[in-house]
Image 1 (cartoon, rainbow, N blue to C red):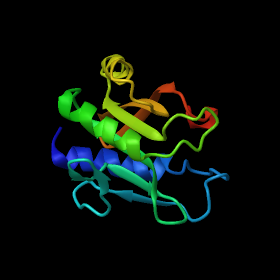
Image 2 (cartoon, rainbow, N blue to C red):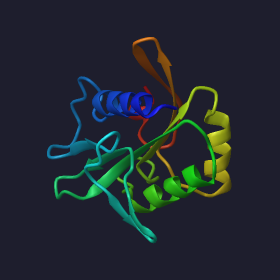
Image 3 (cartoon, rainbow, N blue to C red):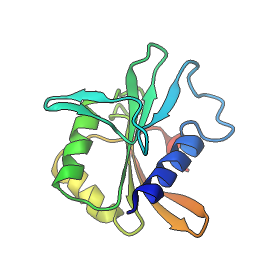
Length: 150
């Protein structure tokens, strides 16, 4: 994926899913940041800093929900998911990590197999596609709040 396309997808997801338009239960004080073309908020991993594509900070300024946008499933993507799952909180109805993985349309089954094979806890797996000027996101599997499956 070209960086401009990836940045467009990241910005769309951040603006339309964290929170959803009209969502009334989004916690007060939460802030949604993106690390697309410009990096604004890293998280600390065992090998140094990582900039998740989407970082939601709680009211204390701590990362609590993270999103990664992928155009391929490989060892580097899996390593990013593991790191993000370690950082994300579990404040949802099922207690899974608040990690949301967005993959190019057609890759969700492969991504799910990788997530499960590597025992990576996550709240949602989504597919995205770019159709002309529009970005579309389709839920594939939700393990966190039922509300998120839209």
